[in-house]
Image (tube, rainbow, N blue to C red; front, side):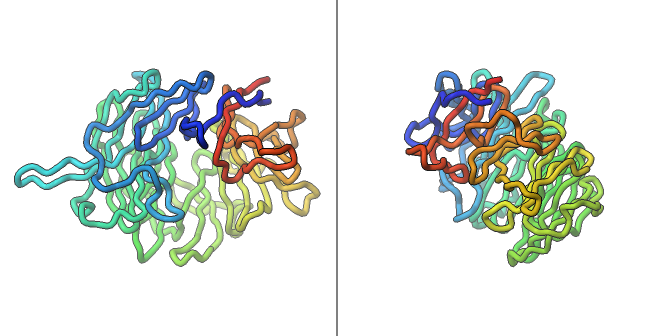
Length: 382
C-alpha cells in the first residue's frame, strides 16, 4: 500500500513537516512563509508571505502557552473559478502614522500552488483593544472554504474574531467579534464564544454572519457528515459533561450512539465517511464508522473480541491507525481489516504520498506514532 521511505522530513533534515498534502507536494506554514516541499525530490519553495508587517514582539515559531495551538494554523487548499489556490492567515499590524493609531488585523493570503508566491491578500481589521490585550494563547487560522467564501479567525485567551472573505474580489463579507470558528459546513459556521466566564457554542450563517442558534454549552466540535457535528460538552472548569450530536444548521440535538459518553473525537475521510474514536484517557476504547447521514456503519469495541486501534487518519474510504500488534488499515465501509497490511500508520495521506513516523532505531522498537519528531514520505502504491 505504501512504498519504501523516499524523503525524511522534520527532525534534523531541515525540511518542514507537511501540514497539508496536494498531489506530490507537502504544504506547511511557518515564520519563514508558506512553504511547499516536492516530496519526490525534496525541493523547497518558500513564498506566500503577507504584505503588511507582522505583529511586533510575537514569536511565530512556537506556541504561546503550554498545550496551546501554534500561532499559525495549517494552510488550506481551495479550488476557485480562477484556479487552485493555497490559503494562509497571518497576524499583521499596520504601523501608526501621525495621529492615526496602529491597526492589527488578519491578512488572508492566497498563493499560487505552482510557485508558492502570494497572488492576492485581504486584511480583516481586529478591534483596537487588541493592541493592549494579552496575546496569551494567540492563534490565527483559515477555518475552511465553501465555494468562493473563506472563513478566518483570530483568538487569544479572552478575545476572538471570525470573518468571511469573498476570495475572487477580496471583499470582506462580514466580521463578528468575540467568537472563534470551530467548524465550517456548507451553510453554517460553528463558533465558540471566547469568554473567560462561560463556554458556549453558536451557529452563524455563512452568507451573512447572522446568528442561527446559540446556547450550547461546549468547548469543541468535530464533524459528523456534512450537516452534523459532535459537540464536546466539556465546561470551563475542564469537567466533562458528555457528548451530543447536533444539526449544525439549527443547533437541534440529534439521536446518535455517540451521545452521552465523553471523550469522542471524529474525523472525515474527505469523501463520505466519518470515523469517531472514544479515548477519554490514553487508550482507545471504541472506534465507530458513520456515513454522511449519521448512520452507524460499523464499530470496534473492547468487548467485541477485536483489538481497538488508535486511529491516525482516514482518507477516501480507508482508515489508518495502529494497535500493539502494529499498523492497521480498515475498510471504511465495513470496519474489516484490509487484506493488505500497512507498514505504517500515516498522519497524512493522499493518492500520491503518505506522511508517517520515521522507523524506529531497531526492529524490536515501535515508531512513535503518537508524537513523532521525525517523519518520512512514502509513495502510495497499488
